[in-house]
Length: 140
Image (cartoon, rainbow, N blue to C red):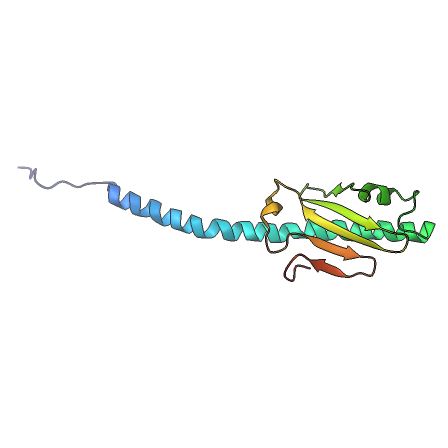
């Protein structure tokens, strides 16, 4: 004779599933902002690399033409008079203020890119004297 009052239930109850979903949601809410901060921090290297590259190109122009803003210097035309250069992954735009003996380069995040949400290091600046600065914090 079989005992019909004993039955074995396999599976999860609705409460157990909801608890797991809630735990995953909480972990995701904590982890995602931290992950995005890490991504933004690693993407800052693109701005620094491009600023240093443009600075080297300007130094070559100064060596060849004795002026940073010489008409024969192609990079000078690319970043002056409101023109900008985009970095390799279009995360930053590089602009510059040039005179014959000085320059100030600025890397600002492109709107719509992941870097646009980088509030701690929004922009980077580099001068002909090698002075590096950022909009806030110690980002270099």
